[in-house]
Length: 101
Image 1 (spheres, helix red, strand yellow):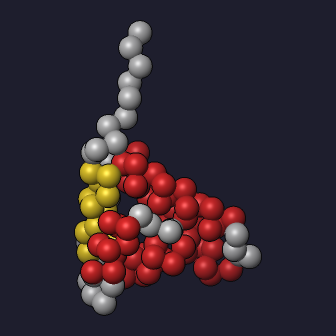
Image 2 (cartoon, rainbow, N blue to C red):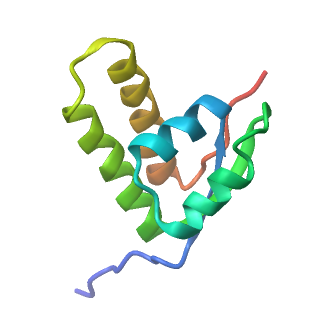
């Protein structure tokens, strides 16, 4: 049986709200390329797309989860939990697009 190796060069296009982008910059500890992409659209009030390769995406999700464990509950922890859920769902489906009505 041949082992299936994930394609770390695959890119996930993640739609992010301004609030999600701010949380990722502060609590996600993104790699330089993602940090630059997040900062490039930091002032935008719109939903923006930030592309991430699978390796970067996995590390970012892990960092958000780590930050959740270091908060003391409350609104911030709930925001980070929601963001982490979205990131994990996007990773599983390889689809980071929001369902916007």
